[in-house]
Length: 98
Image (cartoon, rainbow, N blue to C red; front, side, top):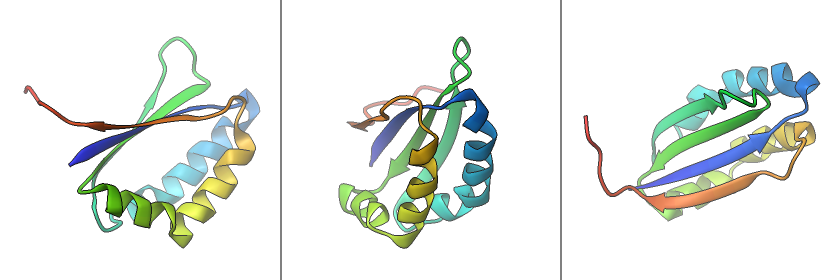
């Protein structure tokens, strides 16, 4: 399993549009084959910055999602709202402490 982290910056006037789009699609994303976990975070000091964390069974699953109609539709709406270029990382989860 690995984690995909995406950092996105939005124009202030587009935040509600982003949140609406995310809320309309979050269950579909989370239930996409291979996705095991999905969270959305908002920066405490810069409310225009958001992060998504998603856990994937394999890189193949993530790539299948990224080629899907679901991703294309969500991303096409989201990318119009950015104030900065998004950043993404794929990282291996090494440890969890609870």
